[in-house]
Length: 210
Image 1 (spheres, one colour):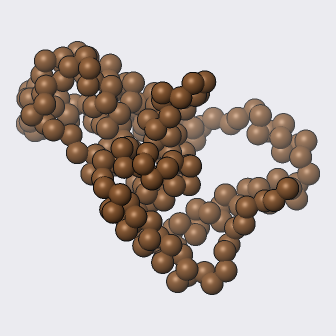
Image 2: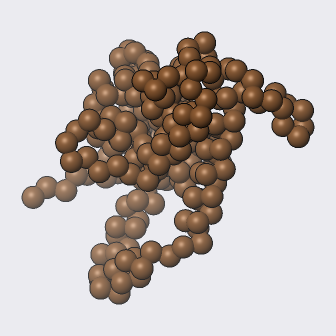
């Protein structure tokens, strides 16, 4: 998944494409222990890649990491992702790809730490302005979605497909972003539907109607 040809030379034409794929990979490394924390940034990144050519599209914070990766790679134009840069303090060989992923990992961790320490002032005033029952209902909805996804025990790839679909990305867009075939995406989404139906006989959430 997210296959990148290590033998391909980094150029000014493909540096953004490679940076985006490495950013996706970096987020994937956090899925096992910080899935809920990085989910919104990951979904934002996927949506930005899919809609970056749309007029008036506003990029999310998630795309910052793709730009960070691309800026790093700009310093290695003419090299390949598999080229060796040296060794770290433990004697491990560090390639261009590994060095980039390590930088992204540190930046994502820093972002998560800042998020945990900060309090959004808008949220403070919203809680005072909105009736507590309404506010709690909205909060419970998001908590309920996270709980349902957790209960389904999906694999990382199945979660990625579900997140893409939840963010409104078309099947064609998912093929391009996730670098897999229509059949693979269809099978993953079919498994998610089967798992959901097996756990819940009735839909847990319904779209609001006017």
